[in-house]
Image (cartoon, rainbow, N blue to C red; front, side, top):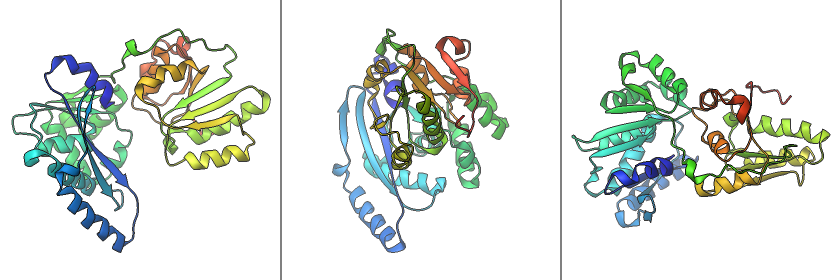
Length: 329
């Protein structure tokens, strides 16, 4: 998201800086938790240890933030703020315009660390807002971000409607601005086979993406068609489980998991396959799906909210939509 959004405005500003507070999440007992906190505090006090990289998009500041307590967004964002404040000269984001990704964390960090006269634009694309809104402290923070933001952009109407229903008194501030896709980075001459033997999934290997159901569905097709293959490109909590399950299903040599690729490699990846399959339960937008269309690759996608909007009017031209289901059939 950050790379595409930054590229889209690169010629409009003299200088661009990218700040990435990076979760290092895990679990630990009390003693180890204390040790991690003490060590982290000492390391964060040495600003010269924080990675600062020059990238084609701008200067990139990467701030690791170890998180070991339970999933509670309010203290998590405070940990992010503490780490970022120590990494920034003067402890503030000294920019006239700040584009924050997601209300939590990006919007809260911008609100707390921006200069008083800074303009804050928030782009929301998170799929976990129900969890945020279920926690009173996190919900209150989100509302504060909505009030402070000069512009609050949602990547789909589905997402706008979800936030508007939660905060009707600020609903007029919400606008729909789809994610940025660099169509010039894609070539549409995708020479896919009409038999659609080479299936491709690109994304995180996590439960709500429906990757488990996708693997089971693929196994049913593979029983009848000896030529079909499935490649999943990404990483996540289900990676090992998927590999073990594929072995149990007898899919050796026909199911492959590859590590994530950079945005610049996606076009070539699409051109080596016949069909993009995406069985997600919920998508606020679905960048991979639009990228596949840009590359001329057919798509088979669940009606997972965002994709229904991005494919509106071209559903049967681009491929096909299917219902969300836990049933591999």
